[in-house]
Image 1 (cartoon, rainbow, N blue to C red):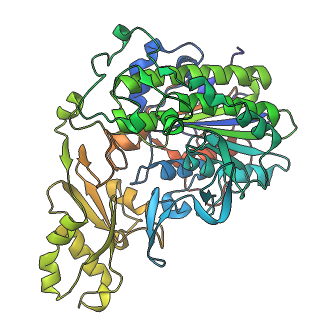
Image 2 (spheres, one colour):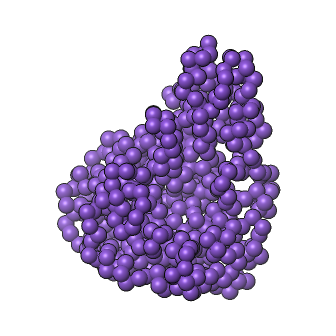
Image 3 (cartoon, rainbow, N blue to C red):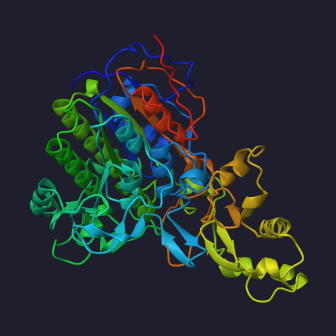
Amino acid sequence: MKTVFIALICLPLSLSIFASDIDRPKLVLQLTVDQLRPDLIERYKDRFVDNGFNYLLNNGVSFSNAQHPHAVTETIVGHTSLATGATPSIHGMISNRWYDQENEQMVYSCSDPTVKLIGATGEGQSPANIRVDSFSDHLIQSLPGARAFAVSVKDRGAIPLAGKKGKAWWYSKSNGRFISSSYYYQNTPKWVKAWNKSNPTKAYDQRYWKLLNDKKSYVNAKHDDRHWENNPYALGRTFPHYYGKQSALGFYPRLSYSPAGDELTSKFSQALIDNEQLGQQKQTDYLAISFSSADYIGHQFGPNSLEAEDNILRLDRVLAELLNHIDKSIGLENTLIVLSSDHGVADNPNDPEAKKKQARFLNIDQKTLEAHLNPIKQQHKISGPLIKIFNSSQVYLRPDIYQSNIYKRLAFEKELALSLAEIDGIDSAYSYKAINMKQATGIERAIGLNDASGRSGDIHLVFEKHAFNQSPGYVVSANHGSVWDYDTHIPLIFVSPLLKPKTNTTRVESIDVAPTLAKLLKLPKLNKASGQALFELSH
């Protein structure tokens, strides 16, 4: 494999580019690993191969304090912030789902009833709900002839990175194919039809997910069957995990809850590189790949499980294979790479590591909140419920209540927030409208950056650190979504022959990624980006 210098983001004046007059790269490769905390890379790096994660770690600059600046650390939010350089308050993707008060219904972030799926049946998906351009859009607009593609198991992992002008592909749990929507294509390209027809999921038919290495070599060797682990689609709680027959119900979803999801994503991406001839034209092409297995496995078994450990070891090899393929077809010296994550994850409160931090479970639901607000309702003579919807951390108030009390809206929301913050397990509560973004810092700033008009609730709840609020009907072993550092802290690595290796511990943010890519490619600034370019181009 050819040598390429690697560096993580650092501040503009702390690191310079040694060759400002070189041509643009043939390919920009944006890699996102869903639910990847930086400490998990460090924990297992001694068993990584040379050309996967360690290729980056050993030759690059480790940046240890990259953070998502927003409060709701969910998949669509993190991916869209990485893709656009904008905060949720601007790009509009405030959570995976939100309540549409005008139409009085829950909305999935990528849903689009005006389009149809290509390659499967079901609800259409597109970037229609994203309010700004992604870096991929900016690249295509700035460089006529440039192309952009994104691939993931999840639609919400591919769509924001592909943007409005690129092409997105994701895995169908109903038929095991990679699919898209009529927003991007009228018909499935021939090469995709051929790839799907080759039946790549057949390789897992009646096979097992076995440990990659001897069990004794695993840090979590004794963590193969803990009572809080789940059994997704009857995949089992212990090794070896049986995939079952391809013809049986649950086979295709099981693959996404195992390393198979990432393996299929990489193989499809390699086929895309070859068939679309990425990096073989005059202008720069863009390929985003979001690996989802770590998230699916983390939710069901926990980040400190034997399953999670084996998965990251296997992902390391998947990355090595992918980089080797790119090196042979395009050349790593012609490729600009960025690696990051959409969010981190909290440990299960039953986990010994979590118990050291006094983690605990909470059971705070809409009924809990409503009951606590009864004295205020009585004081202001309000009948009926105050809360219309409680979604994750967001409280949507009944829209007509402001006509039935003597308080102005802002004052009333502040009163409610102060009251809700008294509930055991809630660290604090904020009225979105009461936040002054010119003065806000810390948690208050993060919440303000998550406030998008017409989509956010009225009050944002911050659960106490290391608390696990269990949502009815959503049983997982581990979760994310909070404002705390275990959810906001992410890896962030740039790989380019333009950059000199250097270590930096300065805080940077996910919204700096897209502006930095634009800077490195010598493109105009992104109009709606909130972040800053982190490298200073100098001679």
